[in-house]
Image 1: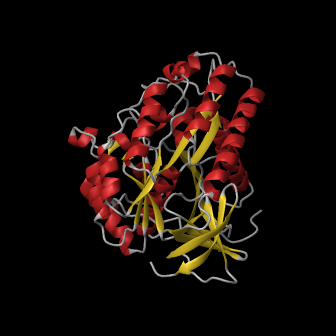
Image 2: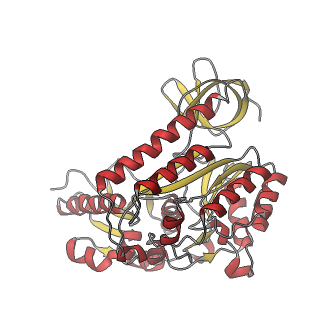
Image 3: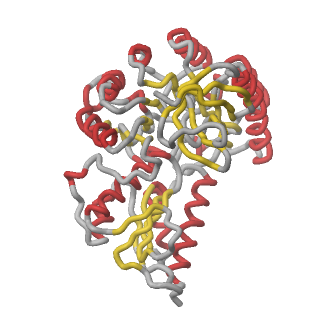
Length: 440
């Protein structure tokens, strides 16, 4: 029985997974709004007649969260709490026949490249003139900025090419136009994302062209920070570092998932690199950019990973001292190259190795943060929670990295503005400070 009146033209979009999915949801929402739908993102009002779930199919935990969410809204439909439920995104792309069989009371399943078909089902037009237009789900002052789709890399563990297809770069002129549109609406920080940033341009311009894109984006008036996520180490275009040094609004920050350091693991993962090449690349980057914050992501418990491989990873982390680091327990994904290998590291061992890496990184992060005490940094403030304004330095991305907290009772800043903050104390992943100068 319905407990409240549903608004017939109202859509609730629910997003699961990574920042690339967030952008896809924002594009969907922009198209729906242009078709005169009322659109909310993860609405709590429970009065939408239509729910669209943008799913993740990356690893086991993410897949399970997506399945649970689909079931939740399918049950809500059965109870009369929503009229229509549609599913899109990576899980739907990868497992559509299985989902249709197991959860049949969903009104439609759509893949990652079927936005026009989804809109048509909703009796909406796909408006080509809106390419690049989105309804932001993030605070207005920062935006995820997708420069390419898909991936051509052969990594053995990764199902992304199965769900997203091959690498397709977006033209520079289209991206610059989108950046100008975002800046006009108050966006100050662009976080460049793709499955592989460093491959950008090879399909369109027959060369790696990330450096040229960065030059043109950094010229956009109003964009004060540009941040680079998901740079593949193989064939890393070193001219990008020259542009980062030259342009003050490109953050001294690089997110470069390295996955492992053991040669046997890198070979089996089909990463196209070696331990020594990886170490050399990190050294080159730090030699050219001494102040850069390096973030990486690793995998624990890949098939065949020995205690010696794990110890080699720990020793390398200790020596390299990454500014930011995350790690996943290996997920055995069907139809990937690694699926032919025996998933022979027990779940408890994967978890123990993951925890050992993060315990080591926690200590490194604390030491690096304590060295910041007494220094002053430009901070972009994202929110106010309780007694604190909370922001980030150029060395930190939202949601995943360190935060800077200043007491709201003693300092005043506006959310979405920059301020200079002197660091007064530090914890493992948080810095505390006081505003020195609220001007930019």
